[in-house]
Amino acid sequence: MDEIEPAVERRAAVRKPFLCATTIGVGDGGLLRKPAYIRDISEKGIGLVHTTPVNLGEITVDLPLGDQTVQMRVHIRWGGRTGDWYRSGGEFVDVVD
Image 1: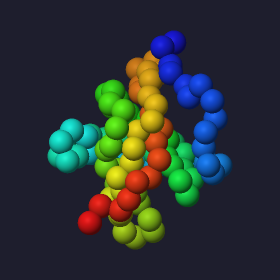
Image 2: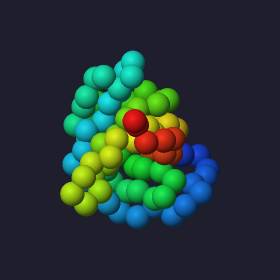
Image 3: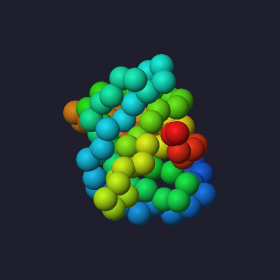
Image 4: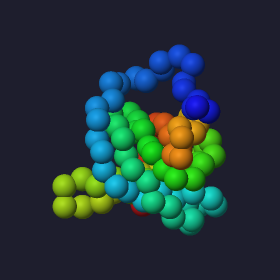
């Protein structure tokens, strides 16, 4: 298994399981949209699962909140492969206007 995990737990808040389909935006300005799953979430950050690799740095994540969806900027801090899937984790930066 080629999984990359964070070397040291640096999360400022405990993440809770939150399995939900979403869309992430990668590339320049998040224009390239890809399907993904949210696997866990906290008030500070998010864990994702996706079928293609995601580079470290900023992406956007569509975050479903009740009957609306909020697009968040997320700074991806780590990522790696687990079997046929990729996992990544990052911290919330801001809400996209």
